[in-house]
Image (cartoon, rainbow over all chains, first blue to last red; front, top):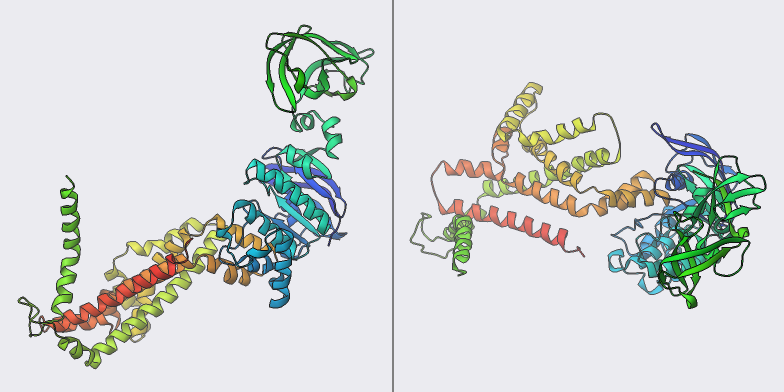
Length: 345
Length: 255
C-alpha cells in the first residue's frame, strides 16, 4: 500500500530551541525521498513528526489526505525502521516479522505465512527460526525492514538505516532498498547524512540545515544546480571562488562572467572539481601550479594554485590518464554553465 | 614460585567453607552430640527431623513466605522501575531515593516499626505479616536490580512495538517483561534466599505459625544436637538449589 504525504507549515520547538522552522513538503505516493543534512539539522525530528513520536508545535501532517498530526504511532499508516533496528531479541525472526500482524489480530497460520513471505523478500527465507543475535548487522537490518513492511504500511520511515553497516555492505544494501521499494510501491522517507547514499537511492533529495529546508529536487539537479550555498557544499566537494556583481554579470579573479548576480554584495561562485579541466571553456582560469595530485582510479584529484589568484586553492578532478606531476604548470578552463552563484555567506 | 597463591586460595576457601562443611558432616553423626570424633555416617537425624511435624510445617511456611513475598516484591519493584524509567515526572529522583532508602534501615527497626503499626491497627500476627515485612526489605533490592537493567535497548524495542500497533499492556507483557527476564529472575531468587533465612522480622511478626529460622532458634535453646546440623544442611541445600536454578534460568539463554 502507498499514500501521499503532505507536511504543512510545521514548526517545532524543544523548549526554547527551534528544531524545525516552517517545513512545507509534498511527497507523492510511491516516491522515495531522502532527508539529507548534517547531525542536528532537524531531519530526525521531522521523521519523528511523520511517525507520530513527536507532535509538532505548529502545523499539520496529512497522510493519504487524512490529518494525522495528533494520531499516535500505533494508529498511523506508517512504520519506522529504527537506527539500531530495535528487533525483539527473545523472538525468532518469524515472530519478529509477524509481530505487527499479531497486534493487528491476524491468526497464527496466516501471520506465519506472511512473515515468511516477507523474510523471502529480503533474502532470509531459510532463517525464520533463528534469533536476532545469530545474525550479522546486515541481516538484522533486513529483518527490521521485513518487520516494518509486513504490516503493509502506506509510508515507511527509515532512520539512518544503513548507518551501522560498513561501506561495502552499505552500498549493496542501497541497491537492495531501492529494489524492495520498487517491488512494494510503498512511499519511503529515508534519513541520512551521507550524500552519496542519498544520490544512490532517492527519487528526490530534501537538503536540510538548521531546521529548515535548503533545497529539494532530483539528485542530479541538486548536485548540478543547488539552490543554496549550503546545499552546494553539502552535496559534494565544491570550489568557492569569491566574486562580486558588475555591470555585465559578475566579476571574478578570472575575469567577467555573463551570469546573473543574485545580490549586490560579495558573491561566491561555486564550481564542482570535475567542471575544471585543461580543455577549452568560456571561464578561462589560466595557468596554475600543481601543488599535489593523487590518483583515484576514475579521476586524478589535484590541488592547484592559479596564477591569477595565488591565495586561492582550487580542487580539480582531471582525467585519470593525464595525472600532472607536482610543481607542473597547467592551463585550466571551465564551463560557466556548470557554475552557480550565491551571495557570500 | 606459584605456591603462595595456591596456599592463599586454599586458605580462603577453607575459611569460607569449613564451618558449612563441618555442619553438613556432623549432620550425619551417629551419636547424640555434633562433636568429633565422627562416628557416622547415619541418616538417623534426618529421619528424626523429617518425622517432626512442627519442623516440616516450619519449613513449608518458610518456603511459602519466601516465594510469596519475593513474587510480590518483584512485581512491585518491576512496576516502580518501569514507571520511573519510562515516564518523566516531577520529583522522580526523590521517589527513587525513597524506594531504595529502606535498604539502609536495619531489619530490627523495620520489624519493630511494623509490629507497632500492626498492633495499633489490631491486626493479628501471622505468616502474612512476616511476608509483608519481607516485602518491605526486599522491594528496594528488587527495584534497584530491575531499574538498573532497564536500558535504551528495551526502550527502543518498546517504541518499535508501539509503532507496530501494540497496546500498552501488550508492550509490557510481550516485550518489556521477556527482555527483562534475567533481571527479574535474579531479583526473585536473591529475594527468596534473603527471605528464606531471615530471622529478626519473622521472629517479631509471627506468632503461632513460624518460619524455619524461628523454629531453629527455639530448638537452639535446648542445646546442641545433630538435629540442628541436619536442619541447617537442609536449609543450605534449599539455598543452593535456588542459586543453581537462578544460574540455569538466567545464564543459559545468553548468547
